[in-house]
Length: 592
Image (cartoon, rainbow, N blue to C red):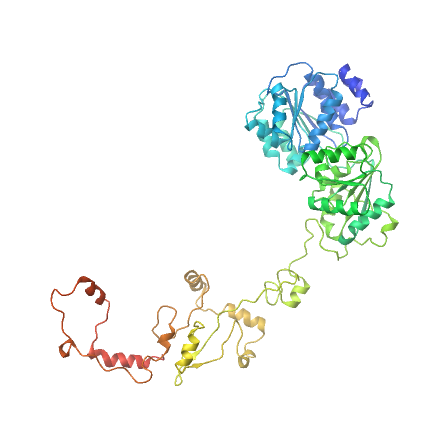
């Protein structure tokens, strides 16, 4: 079948012939007639099969009749990345050069003023990323109530990037009566729900399984240690006939590190990731397409929407975190029926990520045979001596052998925590336990502040050796059993029950040390001041009794005292000579 059999206009066929295309791809054969009929379409095809041309060609013929209005685009195409939006724009320029259609590209990193001027002139085709489109709508620079055709491209990528809420809001601003074209490289349950939400009685086209690699791509896997990955990559580049290649990393900072490493070793390389300004990203892509650089080190921002011809290799320096990204990465090569090569560098720590990719492919990735890597290849079950893997699930279990042996980490004995990082956590101990007793009688042990020890020594009291934390005197240690059992006993030695312990915690949330007071000792709350532990009479007994008012004190004259004096003396205990002997006897009975 040829393009002339699909119902396209002569002007569009002429533009297609000028581009050098003679035979349509399977997705184009099935999609173009459906779009020309005006039906909603759900298209599922792997990357590199011509999905973009499958909707741009018929849209050009549909929009050829009509007139655009200022700020009211006639069609809208939503793309997840700037590069994909620019790629769609290039397709409209290529296939619509014989049609007087106006087009605007709304992407981040470009001037708002230029984009607003294009909208004011009126556009037939509006290509936008979700964020910039909503920005201009909120500014009142665009109206969406005249959109006749909506295209949602790479819907699964939008789902991964978190753009679906923005897409749902945009669709809610469009007319209910419209034609919707929904394209995705994969078809999961979430994508199916979105399609049911946006489409009305769609025609479903699936030319490949939901997630499969192109048969024109030769795949290979090499497992090395983390510290050997860069050297392994250099050996692959030198041993294989690499014309140009995409080298994918999971993180943006790894893109910069790998780019500098390859540049220092004399490779022709450039870098591309999402943190670069849009102008620099465009320059990098232009250089790569013009073969001014052989290697493009990039993040997943380049995994879709980049149509670069004759890419010989794709190398996954990191196993992708999302298994479906593997399909899109290796889809940069083996395009248009040409043979491509896709190699993956893995570490033993990437076993879970690699298993997810192979499960999606329904077959294992075959090992790559490179004689130069014979001394570096390790088993996937081997321990990664170069460090943890980069993927999810590569973190070692908490509390390694080193931590258990040294007692580091959160537990004194079990070594829980950092797993042998070498950072030692100090052991928390209780405040010093001091036992103070009079020479004649032993007193109850008490927790006191450090400054009270000197006062107690000046008063001639006996101070026993301090006991810190969970330790005990050496003569009692052998009776308490092993250290581990003793620690467990100390943690549960409070016999008052869980309710009393909880009440104590509420009363003393900061864990301040409290004194243990005997039952026959009168103190202030839970803490006895140090001066009460010292004999106030110095061993000489109490002073003589004070005289009663009849024996020497004059009664205050009536009217010569104020209310302040009365209020001050209301809280003073009246001296009672008849009660003095009983008071002294009670003081003598006290151990303090």
